[in-house]
Image (tube, rainbow, N blue to C red; front, side, top):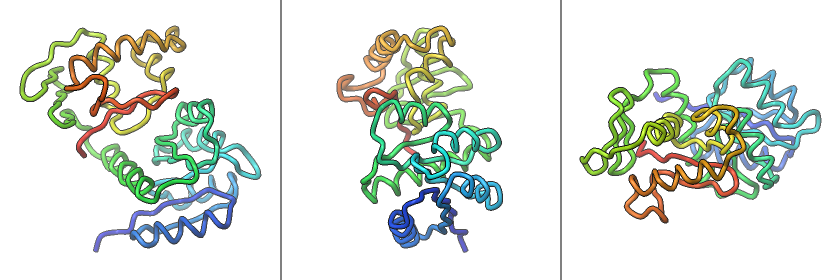
Length: 231
């Protein structure tokens, strides 16, 4: 029998806890809840859940601090579920290690889809990393440094390839502008968002059938980008 995936919900609202228990339980998830950051950290350490759903507004500490402390010892996927829709809050949470961010109220289908993606991240992180990444007609061979579209090799500059490889290596996860700039170009470029947009435009012209309607590299307005894979 397939083991039920375990989700830890760190949220102080009883109504939200009940709603998530009902929604996730109906889709064969086992759910634990914690009403505070400290209790959530303790349960995460004791129970080692498969995914953590974390609210930012907790009674004892900010959810971003919870995320920071979790990332000191675990790579369990973290999905932020919060009423805060400010771009600054999203960027802080994602830069502190959150894998995804949903704003309340949320769609059940979207939450379940994000959970499935988080579970795939966890499975891949525990096994061998993918060396060939597929997104529609796009294939990226990270070992051979070869990118093909519909079977035809795409010629990229060294910088374009580094950017694509970094995004694809963190597929389906939102990466913030500063995070991408620091890891691809260096910490001195963290604030050069326009510089990143220029390279992203060049990359999309080479990879996307319709660069203005991308399907491989999606924009998260004001926050960053997400590379989409088939699995």
